Length: 467
Image (cartoon, rainbow, N blue to C red):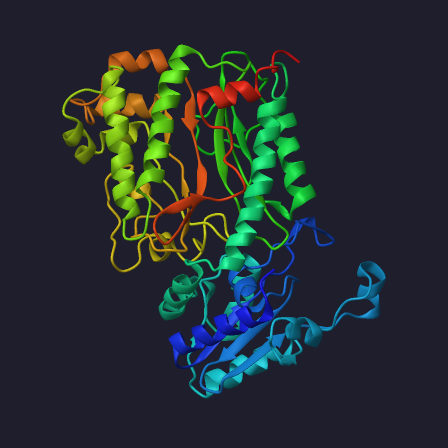
């Protein structure tokens, strides 16, 4: 649990960075699933949580930087609310928990912002990502919805990124807890996956563990024997011996900090020789990234080293050819790994990406590389102590992409297209761990690492025959 003094310090530091104007934070409202009374599980805006802590719908807050004033806007519950929800703390009590002394009714927000605008004060706000928030912000500021993003505060975004991208000891403890839940989710699948099951059964098992130990999943579970589809949310396949099951899933703990792991396991409990060959390349890439990730190292360079290992090993298998360094410069390994090596993680599983990937993963020092594969890297900037990132290399055999490259002769001097036909039904392999950058290197998050070597995975699955 993050103590009150930390919330106060966060807001103080933010106010110093902004220097002038009003900082406006809008919390989230509930979102109807199919009618107003039946809503999706509530999820508060992460920046509102980070600075103000209140994890309830329909709150807003402001910081008047020049006055040094903080106000939380919200409505106390009525008797009708109490009938359905039970007794609730007052707005003042909720705000006081996080060090804010002044509160107002939510209806007073529009008058407050109108007065600030009349006084020619700059309103700093974050780019909105929910429709309800866009409508409210449009009404408050008198801006068309289409103009909200371009008028959001670049200065505020950069100031928040500089704070949130470095995790303190309280946040690290929360993420460790989320990773322990993620471990339980993935280990259960390894332990219980049997030939003849429906993928949905395993996905539901993971989702249940996430909810029973924490707040929810940190994102929609990816669990599929078609691992070549990077974000495959279909769970209708029957577990079939000889196939690979790619499982990418994570949890949010009760304070909304996230985990994100991926493992690829053999249906039936044993990898084939062909599967082992590709699996061990991905594992080598994962472990090499762990060796390299430390303060001062650009994660872009770690990504390039992963491509280098991949090209070398795939060349040994006859799937690639030519000079390895030239192949890496040309982006040839992107045929097999078209995504980036990893991303930041914290209160969001892809931390702060609602601001824009470039703010979070690049900053002012790094520029996005436009080459295929390289351009998909979400985290490229130099690592610093306190960063929390994912390490998730993968190798995928995507027939449509292979055929496209073959037809267009893309990197033809580096790719053995005829040999690749043998892998069109292979699927894909991804191995992902969550990593904290420490003073001298890094450590894995969570109490222990999920089984990851061929031997470890097969040992967990040794009794997993048919259902």
